[in-house]
Length: 392
Image (cartoon, rainbow, N blue to C red; front, side):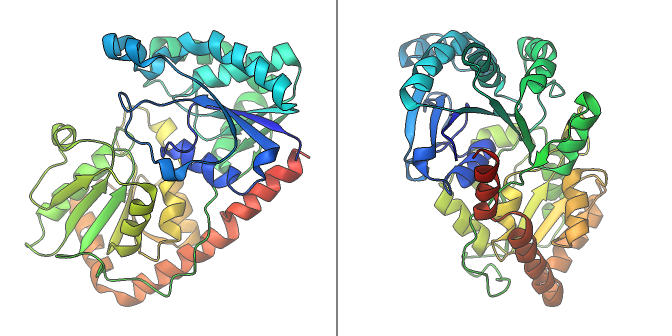
């Protein structure tokens, strides 16, 4: 692979979804073939850092100094103000291009990374190095961000796509969106996952002490909130001792309570990558929610949470609670790797939980199909080989 500069806000040791996707991909490439121009996240603004998850490659960082972060947190700790870093990112990027002998510039498309995408585009214009895009989320359509973010997306997204030498996306849903918008046909580079040893079969959650456990790992926000609230109601309607919920998330307990995620049978904590994967293996059920009433459903319907592929290889049955027209619900039904509740009905959700706890044949079937889906479509080595071939 010709040397590639990866320009992104999220990369290991960060553990957010975008960082996980890029980490699983680039961990299977020769670190001499790429280098990173990234953002040095501070514990002041983000606790989703796992030092053990770092990738050993040439890395260059741009970030706000800790002093201004402490004194002016509303200015220097918010995603929308990353645009203030663009001159610094571009100046450092030009030095890296020369120092590292870079051939390609690669940027990811995600809801919060507009400043880094725009910086990669400017580096392309100045250096004339080919620009490669990897679509993980929508940008222009994600209107939950700041007015500045929306303005930048409207001004530059079309230009960036037109300038791209190659465009990859994680799913058919995103491919279809960009085909409608720009008449292009991106290549699908699915979310990759490192394949562990094949699970022998579903556990009963016996690795955990106490009642059976349903687990959720990831961010708790509007894209999944009402579905999680439905699960809390379903658990509350079950007899004591039936089930408890563990959320592996960066949200603190008081923040979850403000969002309506509270109760005697609910636990939460931020876990490292290793701890999170252990939880996924030891739970009785893994919960994969998408919002029914987010206010921006067209965006929700294209989302493909990175936790999905981690769930696929866990050996634990998956319960999807998402709208019928949501990509993840359709994908689960197509490949048969999860029990799907596609209506915001607490009673249906409760019955699905009970069925997954009691029906051993169904549990084994879902685990087997989940593994087959991961091997066929999400093997990180295959994904890395696809990217390596494209950029050779």
